[in-house]
Length: 135
Image (cartoon, rainbow, N blue to C red; front, side, top):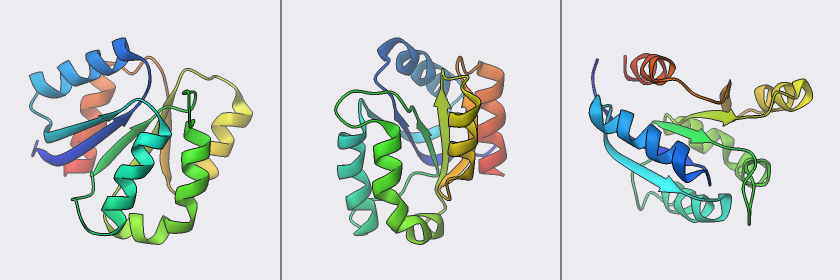
């Protein structure tokens, strides 16, 4: 499996982020892992990506329920830039503890969303995701 250059986790659950970070580090999945606790922090990052000031992540793991700006709000703002973000090779996966079928369907219909994954995200599933994107 080849290593991705950059990945991004947008989630306010520190334990989950810590666990995902440890797995990413242990299996050397990415050169750079960028972490954000809410959509507002991530939006500032994506604004720089869109201006070509920083390299785009190849994979984004986005939680939906966060303080300040949730995942839905971030997706709504980024929707206007779908084509530009897709051209940069970004694979955005919603990773949420929600089992609400309406939310899952809504996320999967969103142009930016590659997939919806229900938490907890296992090590095996994470490795499959990164392997698929890196190949």
